[in-house]
Image 1 (cartoon, rainbow, N blue to C red):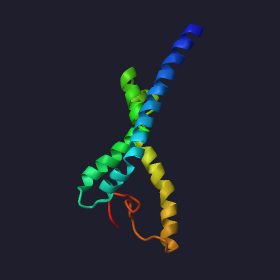
Image 2: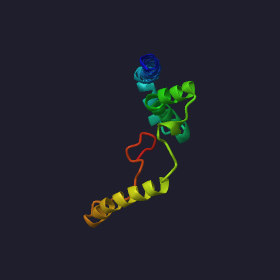
Image 3: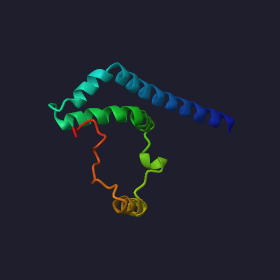
Image 4: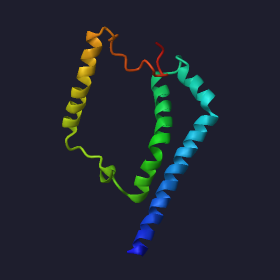
Length: 126
């Protein structure tokens, strides 16, 4: 039992180090090239899709690349970590039901200015 626990502990340590190294490399790369990346992203001459892919790539590199590499390395699916399709519709309906009262409050209080999902996005100029 103790030998198996040690083996599992070693696997988990390797997994954590893969995640830490991938996240750190992406983050430090972003820190080094932040000015150039932001200049490219804010330049409206560049196509929106390319700017979106660049931003999404950096965000994925920081938030998901390490975990994805661990899953590929261990030959595990994301479903083994609880990502399932069951009750997806119930989750969406529940989220909408929680959001609707807030939306009604905004409309009735006169604070609703329209739906602008990309207001704080660096890709578009508003």
